[in-house]
Amino acid sequence: MAAIQITQVEKRFKSLQALGGVSLSIEEGEFFGLLGPNGAGKTTLISIIAGLTRADAGRVTVQGYDVATEFRAARQQLGVVPQELVFDPFFSVRETLRLQSGYFGLKNNDQWIDEVMANLDLTDKADVNMRALSGGMKRRVLVAQALVHKPPVIVLDEPTAGVDVELRQTLWKFIGRLNREGHTVVLTTHYLEEAQALCNRIAMLKSGKVVALDTTAALIRRISGSRLILSLRDGGLPPVLQPLLLHPEESASGNTYALRVSDYAEIEPILAAVRESGAAIEEMQLQQADLEDVFLQIMDGEVSR
Image 1 (cartoon, rainbow, N blue to C red):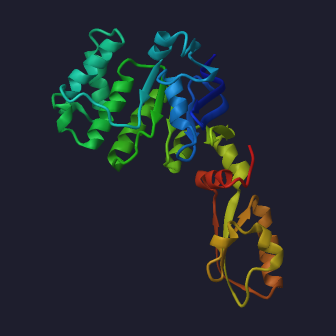
Image 2: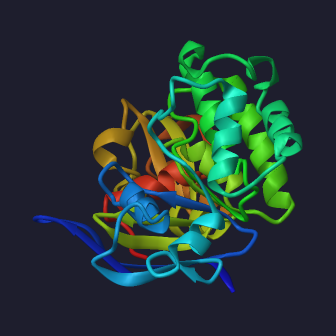
Image 3: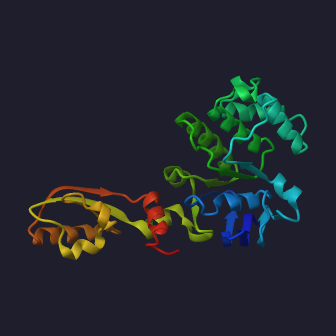
């Protein structure tokens, strides 16, 4: 059984087609990335998964429960950390987490609340009113609220936007532990290095449609390749190598060129072509491709799913 099953989901806001037939299956225990530019439909999809927005068509289940017809059961399986800082200004951190526990019918939950606060470095803020917390601390409380009922599926919508390095490290250490213990994690983020380091599998959305879906390693290997940086003198890049230029209008700076290579065996023929043209190599560097390269290529329409 999939942790989250999304089947042909469509959503329109007046003239805007926010989601145009999205289908995804996220398996139990996965650390799954949902990436895309602003306006791609990520938050709309999360809102549908969380039951905050109704899809116009299609079906979504969480741990087998339909989010529309079995809302209570589906919501019990889910912990969502939203983008926005939403908090009740009348309660302390501990009171906020106890109240959240009550929403899920949990009594005597203080042991787990204490553990969550300890893992998010909130223990010394337990009795502080929410209004007195910094933005980063409020973000930690949002994460704690999502985890207070030990949901098997955790959805993080831009959880580290605008927060410091300490919170990122604290958060990922705890979330990584929960994932290793079997919790399914779904992450949306604009920090692509985070997604590359954390996510086993990634889907990319563009204009409300899935344009890429694969393991992180396979996406990088299949779509982007590596990058060979050459600084030349006594001549420019030979015409035979021009098709390998990455973003030719941007990558050629003086006599420095960035070339796409997909295999180490391609490097020697490139160097031979440079030598035959009469140019000399001043500097050479091989850079491994990363998720940012993949993302830019897909969003620029250079590759297909």
